Length: 403
Figure 1 (tube, rainbow, N blue to C red):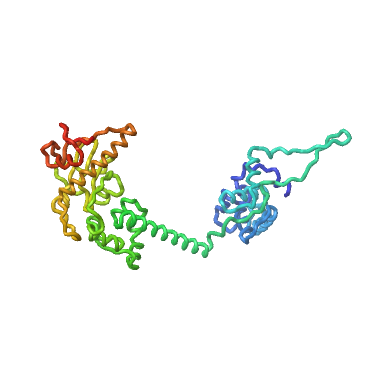
Figure 2 (figure 1 turned 90 degrees about the vertical axis):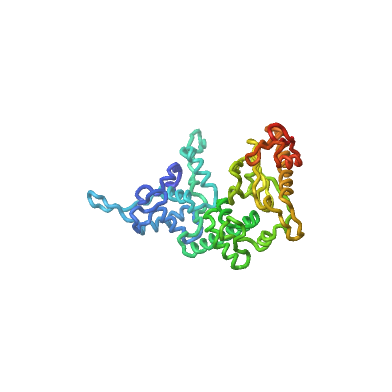
């Protein structure tokens, strides 16, 4: 490599294209928008034909392109035409600026190591070896190569302005987006069974329901999904699989009359999020999604809501409480008080399990007390006190307590 490329400090590698080369910034873009090629542009033009080049080969090719297109400077005072001068240092800076932009790469890590070492000044001083001949000390100079320009240089990728490349990239991006949308729909179907706008809003899907609607419509046209009004309060545009719709139409055929107690913040509890809570009396504690509260759910909706810290119980006046539940398959009637006994038992089991864990962790009490239900004192004479007593609660002056 020529001496002009040797020993130059790499601390100026961010000043790509500065000087008389007519470049502007590390990108080497001509500020006036003319056809004169800047030094980084000349390097890219030389590499655009493909292949990899040694630094000297690349510099010669880029210099020819630059000399053909570079416009001379004109002295504003004398009008003298000053030809543009090629600087090997500017070539080096421009080449490294393209590396930092991710447009040019090298076949080896040696240039990067050399650049990192030269920043500390290790390469600023020449080391000369000496030999002793007849009592005299004479330096021996060896030809050295600028290691920051070693290896083979090439472009990192094809020209992004190529129409075919852009079209292919666009098709690939669209295909990936379609696959991601389909995977999201599958997840929502597994999680909720029904896809509707309130659920999409709760999941905070980018683009909202309108982003998934075209895919849901195509899945409906191909018979993959069914559209209808399956869940009250979810709007007219609801999508579900046919098996899910059959299960919703005949809930008692596909599952037993069981209840489950969950935290109100559990994703399985949609009340207060995707759907509204059932109506309660004016004196009752209004249910909210608050940490520490529990809800007991049946196949027809919430039955009980319990706020452990404030000692309040709320019983919902759902259809399962007002009327007997008719099992169409067996012809049997499940009384509403039987469902409430199951709800009370499930609530007691969940509270005992939570209390055991809290006591073991040293962060809770072993007893839970409820002082009222729907705003009425929960004393021994209250009708629901017997139901709680059967679930394991005992009457105390403060209400009903679970040990």
